[in-house]
Image (cartoon, rainbow, N blue to C red; front, side):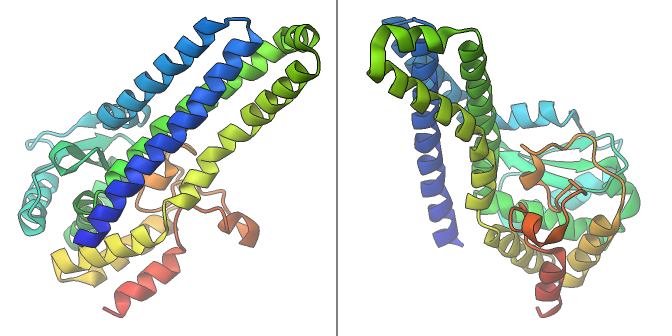
Length: 295
């Protein structure tokens, strides 16, 4: 467990540095295309710094806002708060805040930058369709993500990918406005090369969202499943919950491609076929259930 925590902390630092370099490059390219000169370099530094700080300190709030989640009160869902309190003691971590998404599709995720600043978010459908043993399995899975610092990797990925997509869109729009062609004429061959490099970067950078989903190892889900079995001492509860969640046909409207990797089961129901499964954010549910049944 401690090795996994240390590895996830190192990966978090590497992830931030990698994205800061991409953001810096995109912003500089935008400044070059729009004739900002030195101002473009300053803008690159400012945007890179602000996005890095926002990704680290405000990622959980951003994800909750994107998901339209709201805080849960003990009076509203006492069984949820009781389960979270009990598993918090078992996991030996600070108690995470509870949030709920008003959606009939069953699912859940954890977010935050560390166990001291963590949240667990569930849908109303999860609370309605799962029994207590199944709910405990799901919450224990998310609690394991918190213990292992997986949440830092997940939330940073969401924010950073969003910033990259925004900057890429700016660059493509500025080129359509004629900025790239003007700079190319002014600078000759060197300007043309830089324009091409900038455009390639702008087109390929949004694909980082897919690469990040692949970079966040699928083994994390198996590890969190094992952690849930350790906390509850009842792997059958989580296995049953995974069956119900994956079999549910209702789409989760609050989910999107940027946040899909955070949920316990991929909420995007349109991923089918062997080719698409290679780019899935989660390992096959059948394999996870089989691993739980062997415990």
